[in-house]
Image (cartoon, rainbow, N blue to C red):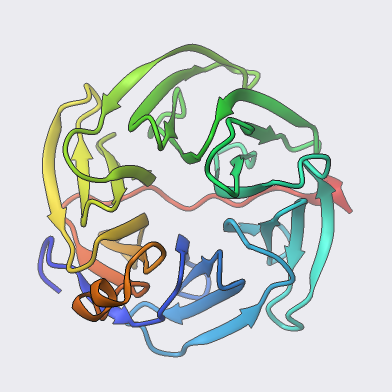
Amino acid sequence: MSLHQPTCIWPAGAELGEGPMWHAATRSVYFVDIKGRKVHRCAEDGSERRSWSAPGMPGFIVPASGSSFVCALENGLYRFSEETGEFTTLRSVEADIPGNRFNDGSVDAQGCLWFGSMDNGEEESSGSLYRIDRNGVVATMDSGYVITNGPAMSPDGAILYHTDTLKKEVYAFDVQPDGSLLRKRLFVTIEGSGYPDGMAVDADGHVWIALFGGGRIERYSPQGVRVDIVAFPCSNVTKLAFGGADLRTVFATTAWKGLSPAQRELEPFAGGLFSFRTATPGLTQHIFSIQDFA
């Protein structure tokens, strides 16, 4: 793989592929198909493929304590066992908003989980940004979103990036020692085609943003200046994650959601998992500490 030339390593055909996650312990990539209700896993080169059916729409998957995983379905968080394929309830979140689902999540260096909700119909501003700390306390950090995306942390954990997809805006927040957020401000507004979807931050603090409908990933400096573009052979790029032994391999999910039959013929790899190499490594995938959830 050469720098910035994405290759489809698994033509998974995901309707809404999302949430790629590098699992260093098993040298595997995990991702979900939200609309297809699937959890997928493969090796770094796309081989050794496995898939599991989910009892709802999995918004994301993250590694958790006890060598397990956590997925968000429509009504809350579930522990996922790949050995049995079972989903066990951990926390009910937004069970009183049946039109919502969860869309994206990430774990910070303290083992806390940040994740966002959205209106499944993509019309109502019923989405919120949440944080669950190591004691299992769920807190609403921001609200008023139709589609949330991100979230991602700066290398030092001092800045949280979060996206309002339909407004095409990415925000930055100052993260306080207690996990609270201050000074919400605009980080970048996406220009041209596409909507900001999932993102990741590299070791230099640059923010990589996948563009749904834009056929590319854009890389921004910590000052919000676009410094690079990675073009894809399909329109809907949904999220990326750094992995591999040197954290210089990027894994990116895509989707065929919203494409017409004619467009799908022109984009045969839409819904596939892609990878490409980068000069700058990413950040280590942290583990969600859920010992207090049992």
